[in-house]
Length: 115
Image (cartoon, rainbow, N blue to C red; front, top):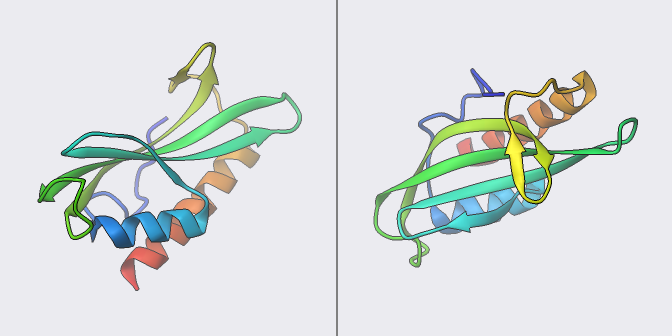
């Protein structure tokens, strides 16, 4: 599921501040390379015991990721169900409480990045 209208698409931040802000909300920078990084937030659905991840894709627009002053731009935000052994299914139906929590976390991150 692609999150539309989060206000995050195209938002820019330096790496150090994005890392700090994401961590405050509960996101973790998992995958990264010199010009791209993803930030993930894990949500567990207590009813089904399924795991979902909110994933924020970013791309460096000035610098490389090993430098804290590198400027990143948010490209897209996804929500997917975790699959075995390690992957995300972006097409599965997501329970409404999971969608609601994901939207709240994205709003919190947006507010921090716009401050």
